[in-house]
Structure formats: C-alpha cells, structure tokens
Length: 359
Image 1 (cartoon, rainbow, N blue to C red):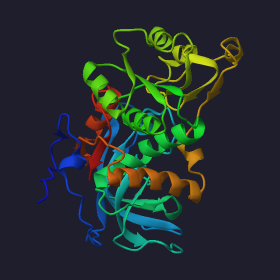
Image 2 (spheres, one colour; image 1 turned 60 degrees about the vertical axis):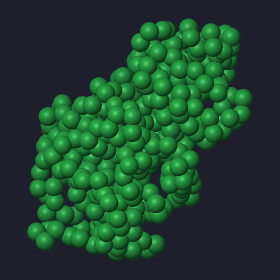
Image 3 (tube, rainbow, N blue to C red; image 1 turned 30 degrees about the vertical axis):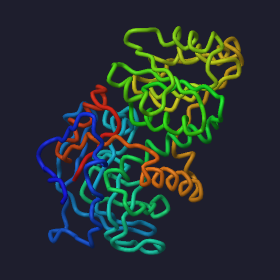
C-alpha cells in the first residue's frame, strides 16, 4: 500500500529517508492532460523566493532529438537559486530546474532507445519545475527497477557530482585524506560515502551535532563543528600538521582561504560550488607560496560531456542506490506549489540531504 501523497503540505520526516518507507512509484502508462496545459513555476523577474510563481502553460511538444516526460519528482539545487537571483543569466520568463525523474510521455523525431512508459531520469530536463518537461534524449537515462522516482531524482545531480569529484577531479585511493565541507549536505553525504568506499580518510565540516552524526554515519573519520572550532586549526591537528591531499569545497566565499591553508604541498582544492557566495578576486601567486597548490573550478557538465561518461556515472550512482550501497536522504518533499519554501530552506541550510518537489 502506498503512503498518501499530499498536494498541499510539505512532508518532513526527521531522521528517515523516504526510500525506506515508500515503495517504488508504479510505472504508469501514457497520460496527457486533455486540455493540453500543465502547472509550472515561472520567474518573470529576478529576485527573492517570491518571484517563483505558479502558472498554467501549454504542455510542450518534443522536437528533434527530444523526449517529453511526465515529471514525478524534481531535484532542487543551488543552481536554480543562482538563476532566480540573476547571478546566472537566462532569458525571462523562465521555468527553472533541470534535474528530474519521470515517465516517457512522447518521443520527438529521431529518438531511439526509449519508449513511452519508460522510467527515466536526467540532469538535462528543460524547466523541470513543472508537470511535464522536455529532455534531450542524449542526456536521458533509464532508471533501474526497484528505484523510486524520488530516489532517482535525488541521485542524479548530486550523485554524479560526488562521482566526478571522487573518481575524476581528484581520483581518490586508499591512504588519501580528503576534507569535505558541508558534510551533511546532499553532495557531502554522497561524496563521503564514495570516498570511504575508495578507502580514503574523510574529514568533514558541519554546523550542528545532529549533522555531525549524519556525517559519521556516511563514513567520515573525523567531523569538525565549524560553528565551535576553527576548521583550519582542527585539520592541521588531525593531520599532524601535514594537511590533506584534497579539499572538496562547495561553500566558496567563507571557506576558500581556509581550504587552501588545509592542503599539503601540491594538494588540490576542488571548488565545485559557492553556497556562501562567490570567491573574491584571487592572485594565483598564492598557490605557489602555499606549496605549489592546484586549484580547479569544475562543473558537472564537463564531466558528462559524452554519452559514455554520462552512462558510466549515472549507471554507477543509480545502481548503487537501487542496491542500497549508496544511501540517499530524501526526507524533504514539497509540493510544486511550495517551490519558494523549498528554495528558502535550501538556501538557509535548514535541511540535510536532498530537497525534492512533487508536481
């Protein structure tokens, strides 16, 4: 029996993952609104969460190489906040979002390898804050049996981000030591699991004792409460002054200088996000003075640029999740109408794990 799926209130189940209490969503057949309209969130001007407004829009028709999916779970990410604020530029009006899981509704010309009714997921969904959305077939993957739509949506962007960081940007191996900021966040929890799986020692930073416990459960060897202690001092203490091999930093402005100071000579800082804001102008000569350090600002899109690489990363992440080898926290589920609240809670760090919208 399925749990009820409320349309007007937010679900929050402390300490539980939805995938532990929800059975996988059924694989529905094709269903198109008779009136050919859908609910969607639109932005007409950049600004605060209040600019996210519910609208009725035509259901789009798939063009050459595109697939129309009926969206069943939407991943909420910081990149949508950046677009909402105007940090990243886009033509307006805009339906935000890119990460979603759902069911294939209709195939555009030239699409092969998919059929109506297939369960699919992607980080290339165009305007996923909606009941229906278009996806380039080249960026779409089928999801394994036994995986719920919530799990699939939660795993894609953050899971593949953790995958490229741990397996490609700085390929971890047994004996390496990594510092992971925001260790109880969506990427942080998945990255910690993957790094531990590879045999690395993981040190994380978190803001509360409850988040520290989550980080330890994910495999962190040491957890630093940055609200109580200077993480730079603690990292030096925990590594006997040597520093770490790599820092995975999705926070940005407030952690950048300390992250560099935590590295061993010739260590690497992977600055993959800016949750606290953009890093100020930086003189690269500092890298030399601090030990011939490496600095990279990677993005997922360059690590799934080919179909082969997309299938490798998505295949690993979704298969591990389906088998229970990669634990997902998906307890924050909001109806589409509460997209503004979902973004606010994400931005103010009120949540752990993944935030999802349900159309």
